[in-house]
Image 1 (cartoon, helix red, strand yellow):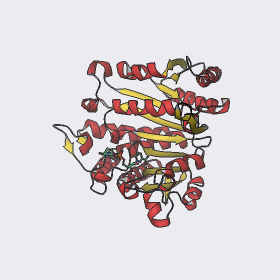
Image 2 (spheres, helix red, strand yellow; image 1 turned 60 degrees about the vertical axis):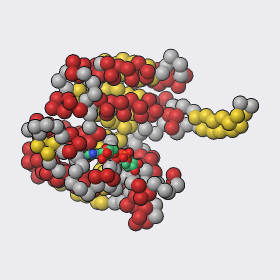
Image 3 (cartoon, helix red, strand yellow; image 1 turned 45 degrees about the horizontal axis):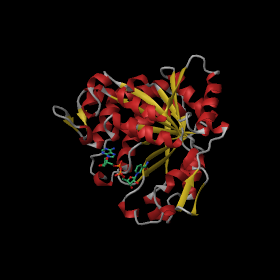
Image 4 (cartoon, protein in one colour; image 1 turned 30 degrees about the horizontal axis):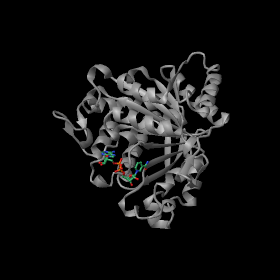
Amino acid sequence: MDYNLAVIKGDGIGPDIVDQAIKVLDTIGTKYGHDFSYKEVLAGGAAIDATGEPLPQETIDVCKNSDSVILGAVGGWQWDHLPGEKRPEKALLGLRAELGLYANIRPAVLYKELKAACPIKDEIIGDKLDFVVVRELTGGIYFGKRGQGKGENGDYSYDTMMYSEMEVRRIAINAFDIAMKRGKKLCSVDKANVLENSRLWRKVVLEVAKDYPEVELSHLYVDNAAMQLVINPKQFDVIVTGNMFGDIISDEASMITGSIGMLPSASLGNSKLGMYEPIHGSAPDIAGQDKANPIATIISMAMMLRYSFDLEEEAKAIEVAVEKVIEEGFRTIDIMSEGCIQVGTIKMGELICERI
Ligand code: NAD
């Protein structure tokens, strides 16, 4: 099959890590008979320097006409003085909105060889941690009505948490579909003991559950979920939650797994077109020095093959190759520990390609 991919390398380590991800995709293409073609476009700081805008129209058009989008990371101190609307990070929100990407999928996987990086006790973690957080991305309190004013107690301000049935239904379907491809366990996180909006969330999730009798559904209040992630993270397979709760829970989940350089993410909408990127930023402190860990971006490619192109075997091939390289003791500097072999960004990419 032929796949047309839009590539946004971005800023800082973006080009370093995306180059390795492309190398891995090309290796998969050769092995399994697929043809990946790439159209590079600008977003973030690189786009500001070239065009004055963080998200040029050409980038939006190319992304919309692609089969999926690969993104490195955007941002850096050079652009920190710019006003909010003009900053590199604005490109991320713009892309999600333009491409209708309302579901953010973040797997949290802790490899047994990297257990030392996990801040939680060994007996709680066991051999391996492997769960996924599905976060609603384009609704909820971050997008609700907001305002401010002056009252008798001084200035006041408010933000409104709003979800429609449609918004909850589509993210719930997404999460149930993912649970079906994994351990068939889904935990919906809300605050239904307090929030009206969470009661609607729970009602709709229960309705959607009727179409997925094989999936074991549970509900947790968000405060309890935050606690359970620390005291018993192994209980989770797939977690689904709203925008703000997901923002917090997914960061907590990623910290449990140690290095930020290992964690991929996917943003999905109604079509097969998704945006695939590591969860970390542009790490300007190590940009262009062959130090960045490319694994998060490389595993994001596995997510793309699985979720956008239904290429499960190819996705697994990438994940198994990454596991092998880790098992064999190869480490980039961020995950380096005693007795292991330190390698740079390029070498790590090559090793993963060789194992594929
Ligand atoms: P960061 O994730 O870029 O870096 C935090 C720390 O982790 C740094 O010490 C960095 O060297 C290290 N690190 C990050 N990724 C790594 C990797 N792959 N391998 C090895 N080490 C890695 O976060 P930050 O420093 O807060 O932000 C830097 C810039 O990135 C800012 O401009 C920020 O706005 C932007 N940012 C962009 C995105 C995105 O594009 N999705 C996300 C977060 C932050």
